Image (cartoon, rainbow, N blue to C red):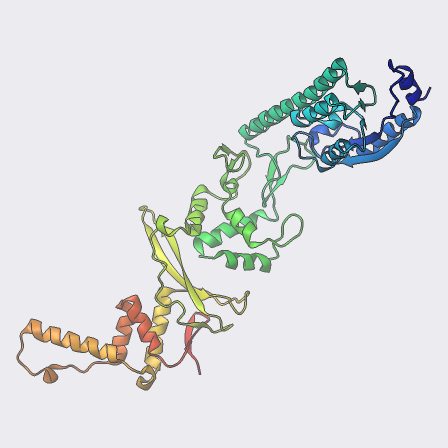
Length: 442
């Protein structure tokens, strides 16, 4: 007997006109692994469509989505259906089971409220029918609350399992570059092994930063030159380079969850030592208050790159000595403004100073321009010398012959930052750095 006829016969007040139920069908498949055993959306819709046909029920619209129902108000399609019901377009719902509609208290409460108001007149699942009666609504609330309890319990159990795995020395999730999961092992119990293809390059990355004073971009260029790629075959990007260099995983410890401050001892093979990791960490530290150094460089922006014509900038590196002290080193290199992949090598400040001193020997005095400051300094020294010696000889008679070039060399080696830069500003020709040598523009 058709569903509408049965419902009409069951009415106690025949004077009230019967309004047929307007059904919508809702199918949902969670994207989370805790519901992998549920029927797919297509199977849910097929089963409920067949049920509607057997009971002569017309489905006005089908709603379907792949979304977790753990959190209230987060399902866009479900919210669309509820809005349509409130607007009077539907007053009955078909769904495979109660937990397809809700697995949280917020959405479940919204459905019960709409049933209390008579807006939702019926909810039909594959094995049950719920109407606006106390017992049926109570059963619907129990089923929805049971689904929420299952979700909450699974979350607690999963976290407990992950902690147990961490305590065994295995970090959950995909291992970082340089490591691989064991092949053929059961999911959730897979061990972590060294990637023979990428691990040596990862180790060399740390060594180049710690011992060869590579910058992040220089390291990235080297990685591209040697053909290093991720497991998916893509070139590594700069942010990923720094993520590798800051990852404790490589020296045998890991933090889980990330940002929690909880570290575990790994059961896998470390790629580097803790000492090497700390050295790299020191080199990457950029906060000026946390280490010595002023970020003031003597020859920055005074020289151009001889390979690409970009400017030459400087950076400081720090080396921790055996006695615990820290030594500062300054390196000059191309800014790569004109050519991002310029391969001009870096040069230490001491070597650069030696090269500049050689340049002073090569230039003619006419190329130095005004040397008023040098003459003033020599006059000041002469007056000081006369005052200290207390000599009554005429000043001109005691003035020594001064080699201007030697004075310039002295300032380049011993002068202040401003004095060094003023000397270079006296040169009328531009300076270029190429192959770790300083050249004058011809």
